[in-house]
Amino acid sequence: MTKPSFRAALQARQALVGTFVKTPSHQVVEVLASTPLDYLVLDAEHAPFDAQALDVCMLAARANQKPALVRIPDSHSSTVLRVLDMGATGLIIPHAVNPQGMSEVVRSAHYRNGTRGFSNSPRAGAYGLIGMGELIAEADRETTLIFQIEDASALDCLESLVNVEGADGFLIGRADLAVSLGVGDIAHPAVSAATERICRACDAAKKPVGIFLPDAREISRWKESGVSLFLIGSDQSYLRAQAASVQSQLIATH
Image 1 (cartoon, helix red, strand yellow):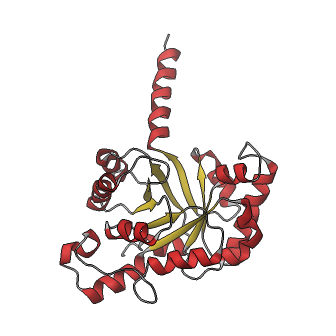
Image 2 (cartoon, rainbow, N blue to C red; image 1 turned 30 degrees about the vertical axis):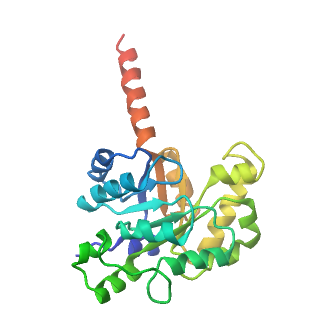
């Protein structure tokens, strides 16, 4: 039985677990790609990924057949094009606040009924080996667009946002949401209420919704709210947690 593509699994609202990659290192990507994680997210918004590092890390992910999304720093069409040409499975687009802006991103990420510039010479086109018709069909079928809802202003037009055609899913950014709501804790009741509201809106629109969690302990709690896409920690937090675990075990033996 053929495994469904990442986009198909996402749209079917299968439970998917991934992590952020914050270190621009292909070795880190290779290590994480060897784990059972369903996908990786290269964080080009909050980590020091330049184009070269992003390109090499994308190569490492694709060589290990691990779906890799990129959280892009902005929604400019040139940014969208560059990352997709590198061969990204899809994009996480921060700060979705209006349907028009989202629709522009959707158009810039697609060939047919869109504005994505065509070239089959980059990695996405197998350096010229994939023909025009095949590449256009595959890219438009599999490119995955996940928009982050992380601003208080997005709550004012939430139903319109989650119904934008071409938006494959949504990721709740509780930290930015907390800041935008004027509170300093992602567990604040205002943030929890907004998060639940976003989950309900996505469910009503039949769109998958995701959430970032520092660790896996809250997965079952958010599954009950309809979350199916989980981003758990990062390469950095995994490294820190393992170092802390080793130290605590050492102390326990004394």
